[in-house]
Image 1 (cartoon, one colour):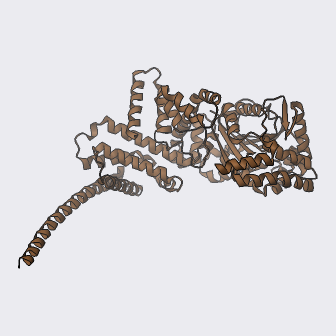
Image 2 (tube, chains in turn cyan, purple):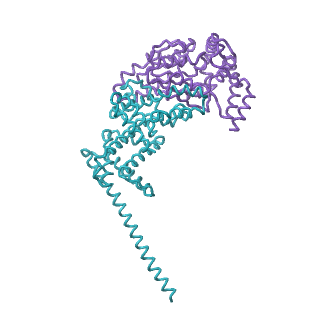
Image 3 (cartoon, rainbow over the protein chains, first blue to last red):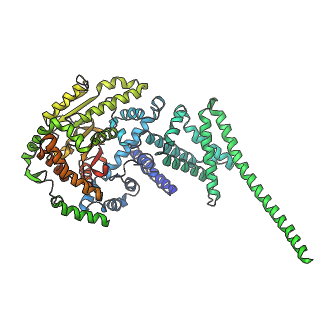
Length: 313
Length: 289
């Protein structure tokens, strides 16, 4: 499902590329889709507002990506709580509703410039809002404040990673284990500018109210990497692979926090070793399985032989 | 579902007048359950608040069991005040919300020591307290002096009508109205004015007594409203009618969903509401883009 959404988006951006004159505006819209609805994590997660009634997450996306379907989407959203006439009024407000997510995304993006100075905090978001000329009051409209900023950054990094994967040339001649460490390195390098404030991110993500989203974001990242490596399997191995890769990513991320070597050289060495370990482990397990099979077969034979001898007598 | 139906039936037997709905745009508007002419309503509301001003806080504490402080705290925490904010608190004559916002800003200031940019912004904070009733404003001014805020330049007391604010367009970062919008004659006008004065990115927040739909609790709440509150009002404030009006006006106020759609119609986005104590009060919020 996630892949499909990505494809639709790519088509959308493809259309944009052909039309340079208003590509700037389109670009903004396009970004809104990315942040607001694709993962439904960064801006829209209304944990503390159970009755968020006018902001069904799916609506803006439907409007953007499938303009001809917007009518049916919005009326189905409204059929439960309003008359047809009301629905039409709401319809008129469909378009501007996308705007607030756009504004929120602009604020979050501007806030990232202040993170090094002020941390992943409300202050950074307030400063960001001032930069884009929006009242800092808008910060109050993010239900989980700084978590929104962190999640926005994570989503953006994932998007960049996907773009790098799709451009493709770096990964062509690599074996799977090298590909994995290369991709993890690309992803971890994106957060290296913020390394001094990264412990704060980890603590924000570990908050009970934020944990589900951050877990989901990590799962998506790991999934994306396995796809890039060309793994399409769906057996029990699927879980093992993702767990192992998630483990490698998280340990390397933590290793990076205390790494003071130039350009994080130690971190990348550590990462390569862990990936190698994992592939070795896979081999070891396979060998152990072959061995067990062989032993089992051998045991079976001798046992059969033994029984036969007993009964022959 | 069945429970809900039953309770609704009981409710309509218990309080037959509650189920009668009247359109909001009639020339005869409502004063509690009474129908009065539009011009009369504001005057009658004015009389109510003039007569309760002195006992207002005591009565609020008694009626809500002190909960109104927590509700206002929640309102301010949802507003997320920041240094340098220009805020308008409408119908906040006694200054409750304004004081809480000021407290919130100064605590942020303490936390934000590392940002030198914020220091001069602290001076620019302005909280306008607007109330149509001078008696209520006087109560607020007195309390500001008691709190040592008498000289504080960031508190500005303004006598004004929520339906025709005296502020320029796009000047406010925040707009709050706590227990006030129920008493105005034209809710739409108030919302339009709020939208007008707010900056882009500014937020509208409304704390208001609202409708309880939880079955058994609803019956209890109705009994409490119609039997206990007027009696307490008579006993403590010596004014039964004002408190009778209070509980009636709550029932007259549009329910959460309806009010939310009115806010959206005024142009606000990201309209949300949160029920507190099962809907005894609701906080509605909207964002101007």
